[in-house]
Each structure stands twice: as structure tokens, then as C-alpha cells.
Image 1 (cartoon, rainbow, N blue to C red):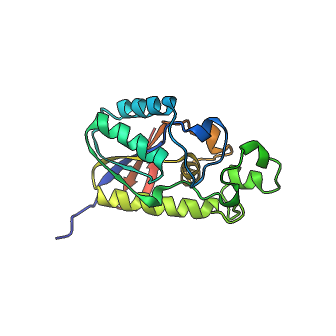
Image 2 (tube, rainbow, N blue to C red):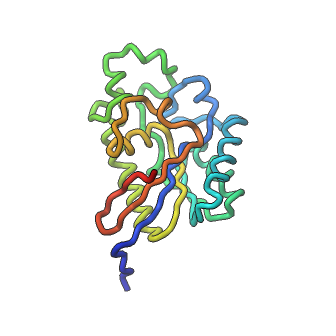
Amino acid sequence: MRVNIKNKQSTLYLARHGESEWNIAFRLQGQLDSPLTEKGIEQATKLSKFCHDKQIHCIVSSTLNRAHHTGQVCQQNLNVNHISNPKLVERHLGQWQGKIYSELSNLPIFDEVFHKVTNIAPPDGESALACRARINTALSHLAQTYVQQNILVITHGEAMRCFISQYQNITNNAYNQYENGSAVPLSYCHDTDRFSLLS
């Protein structure tokens, strides 16, 4: 029997993983990876403490190790199920992955790639609009799976920027917009199939 979801909502806490080694080196990771630092593990612990009274039903993380490890730390403290979802991985930055941020800042498309949300992509990479669509589909599916429940979703800074830009006027890059271990609460309305930011 189909569950009646009229007037029902789901709440997602969209979080950035803890600090990684490449974060402190200002090296673009994209869908490459580096391990969490000690500070990153502490940030993951603080994230779990923030969520402790949120009645989290499930933790869903990106499959990239820095997000998955953050999810493992949160699971130890929240004692709920933790699963990984490959559709929550970071935006693919193509040939720019592994490069130092400052090495790219003078390139003609740099500002549009990292400060705007358009169809412009790094060479062999993913545009911000394509990343937004991917994350939106993944989060909508999670909300529809966990009706009337609270989910901690651990993803990545640029993926968050691309997704949340449709609800906020974002003019800064992900490094300055979302701190490692920070979380943005979202409400999903099942009647309208839409998210909204919670204050």
C-alpha cells in the first residue's frame, strides 16, 4: 500500500566533511581524495554533537573517504545506521583536480567556475549546474525514502555551494562559504517536491 505523504516533510542536515590534508594545502580535491586531519576528526566529532538532539534517523555520506570517515565518526557518537551514496560525491573538477587553488586563479573561466553556477566546467570536468542537478536528485530521493525523518547527509563544499545556490545569492567560493564540519538544515516538502532552507 502506498504511504500517504500529504502534508509531510523530511529534514536533512547537509554537512561538509571534516578538514582534510588537501584542504589545508589549498589543493583542489574534486573526486580525488585525501585523509582527514586531526582537526578534521575533531570537527566530525563536533558535528555529531551538534546533531545529538536532532533525532537523526540515518547518516548518509559521500563515498569519498574524507566524507565517509566523517560519517563513521558521527555514527560512533549518534549510534544510527550509516550508509554511503556515490551520487553525493564532490563536483568533478576534471583537469584541475590535484592543482593548487592559486595556480588556477588567473585562468579566464576561474571566476565563473567557482563563484557562479553555470554550464561552464573545468576541462574534462562537471559544470556547477550539472553538479546541482545530481545533488538535487540524490537529496530528493533520500527525503522520499526517509519520510518524516531526520537525516544527516555528509557531502562536500563545492557540491553544497552548487546545490544551495538556488536558494541563496552565493557570490563566494565554497572554501569561504562552508566551513569543514558545518551543517545546513533543509526541509523537504513532499507535497511540492521542494527543499527550503531552515533558519
